[in-house]
Image (cartoon, rainbow, N blue to C red; front, side, top):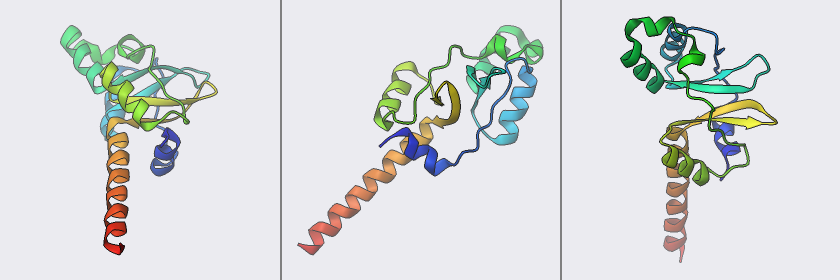
Length: 143
């Protein structure tokens, strides 16, 4: 079970933002796309950081409404913790648990090719466990 399988199920749609956009722009993007985080990509398409709902909350607490005018680069989580396509789902889940994060950009040759959330990984893991249980029940019933 690798991250590539998750990306295959999700599709290749990648939402990102430039680090020089404002927090207000990033909040609007999160709300419009109904997502919890977005990778901030530099001009070369490399991950500069990850902007998430948690960053919004932290920034608002520290700076109040003026935070919305700050650039994403000032409040995003950087450097970003990333995974590769060939990393295991269990390894990614473990990394998320240890680092207390919910989103991982997937990087290949330095460029972002997708993003996975803890929800994506848990759903994939549950689907696999249910398929294995179904196969075991079928095997037992045929014996």
